[in-house]
Amino acid sequence: MRQSPRPPLILHCHIPKTAGVTINDGLWRSFPDLHYRHSHPDRLHILSAECLEQLLRISPDLMSISSHKLRSFPLSVSGRPTFLFTFLRKPEDAFISLLRYGQRQFSRLSPERRRSWPKDTPQLPLRELARQYLQLVATNQDFCPQTRFFCNRKAMARFGITDSNDYGVDSYEIAQSILSEFHFVGIVDEMKKSLEVLTDLLIQRGVQVHFQASTRKNSAPERRRPAWLTLGDEIGRRVIEASRSDQLLYQHFRRQLLASHQELRKRSWLGFRPAAQDACKALISSGLPGTLRSIAHSGQLLSGWRKTGANLGSASDLELSHDLLEERAVRNFIERTRNPVAASN
Image (cartoon, rainbow, N blue to C red):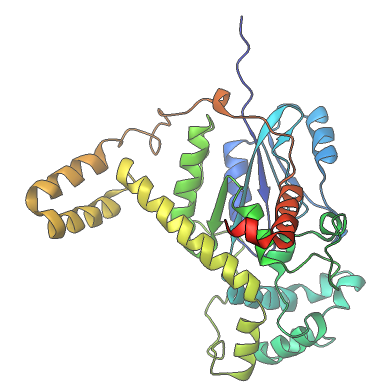
């Protein structure tokens, strides 16, 4: 008898301050005993493919792993395809969230981590903390933690690509190349749309998940955007301009997410409000017949993925690859820089 194909191993590459607790809650809800939230005290530790294989030997039925240390990106582990996903956040919002976290948790930080913060962090006004923190951790315009997350220093150094930061390299080109081959890239400030697209993609691979887009976990009590966080303010401008690579990543994949969600709305029931909006657009563009077609089309999968998961796909369609995405991206980047004429053709 033919053995059923194994589902993909879901790898949530958790960039700090990108709603990871909310995603972890959904994964745990989906796989109560088969989700692993990995942590490690070393800021520079990286979960390698070999480490992931060891985890699967210990727990072969594991369904998902979430970690800040998932900074190497294998397309398969121990004969199982992976499903790689992450979330990006508007860089200045992530930065402010980091500052507020530092103020709340300063006394609990390790001595090593406290050295990267001003000594009077808990007492400083947020604007002044932003100024002093950037002086400590960034030079010029190079505070790009989301970009550096994907361009980890060890992987880049193997190919001769380095900079002065020990966390990772600030290379938008390499990070964008890696993320373009991820199975999903979500956007924190488009959480509902992100989770709907993510749910659909996993269903296509035979996996049912249960996220709650309306519930944000671990959100700071003060979520308002500071009034000084504008280009017209000296410190606000410094914060915004310090993350140029992160801004480019965020903008590119936000556009991509919105396009993917629009396609999903054309074929799946996502609730009455999206269906009504689509019907209004159809009324404006093509009149009553078009409106009726839009309503009927929006409702045709009412009992589909959102309600019962009846359209679950098959894991047998997944292809195995032994590549690491970061190595593939660096090789392509080096080839383009060495032969720019051929790359442009």
